Amino acid sequence: MTASQYNIGDRHVSVEWPEECRFAPFSAALLPFSSHSAESDYTISYNCRLSELDNPVVLNRFMFSEIGSHCEFSAKGEMLQFTMRDAQSGSLLLCMHHRYGTSSVSSTPCRNVSALRFSFWFAYAMLTACDKLTFVHSSVIVYDKRAVMFLGESGTGKSTHSRLWLSNIEGSRLLNDDSPILSVSSGIPQVYGSPWSGKTACYVPLKFPLSAVVRLSQAPYNQIRLLSVPEALGALHPSLPPALVQHDGYADLMFNIVSDTISAVPFFRLECLPNAEAAQLCYHTIFGK
Amino acid sequence: MKINPKYKVRNVSDENIVLVQGINPGDMTKVIALNDTSLFLWNKLEGRKFDKQDVVQLLTSNYDVDTPQASRDAELWIAKLNENGVLLA
Image (cartoon, rainbow over all chains, first blue to last red; front, side, top):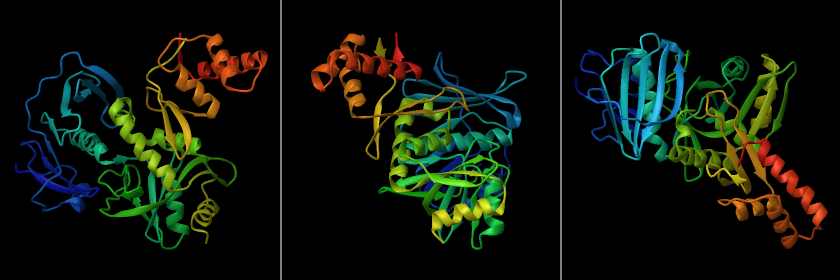
């Protein structure tokens, strides 16, 4: 299979899908990001023979619940390894290697579409962090060509709040519902749509300048306030890819992105009910209308 | 005691910040903001072993504070860092 080209976050990524895949996987999400560029900034190949690193330092272990898979992010010197295993049998689904700071990722072939989708996300995150890009676990609305990012743990109502904007704030639209890309260039934070949007099929290959970040929490009332710098940091940092921030190099890179973002845009905390008034309060506060 | 070398002071929008992040997904990220005195102590004591007396000494010789007050401040500073898991035995 020849390599597929994508333009994600204004970066050209060339992906060699496993040879046994007759078509690129999760193509509905990837299609809007297809590109015909002859040049690529990054390459990912799923047709590599790799052996697992010998005694790497484990940086992070977590469960990818979508397919019941144990994931492990580890390092040995500059070499980074990401593995996914079936939680029941312990058999290896996929093993991925990346030398820190380089522009390529190699992986063993894999048939599981969910594992391919998630490992592509992980590979993209490793590759682009050095370029001041990071995923942020959030839901993002665009209004008047500017992006507003909603943060909160799973189940806080990020998607619900975005939907409240769509139905109550005329002219608002959804950019991404789970994993948009935040980039900072010349001190200006921008948000890109991505092929990863959680349960919502919203795959938008566009970027918008970020105008505010809102940390949501549920409450029996609606109230919004501006956050201090330490509070803003405490809001945004836990929304970065949790495995990557366990690596010192990535932790520094991510910290710089977060720091630049906090210096550039206001951060709010919105304690809210799931109602129209919450969206209107948020909208009036950010856009002053 | 000693400041855990994995923690660094970083500057964000003129605030001096130490990030203490959890290991597991869902762990809280603690954000410690240092004021000027606290930053001074951190910079002086980072990378070496120290005890309360060293903190008191630094305070009395650099700030207009008497020993009993410096002693209380030193205890508070150490307790705060301990509470946030920043110090190693």
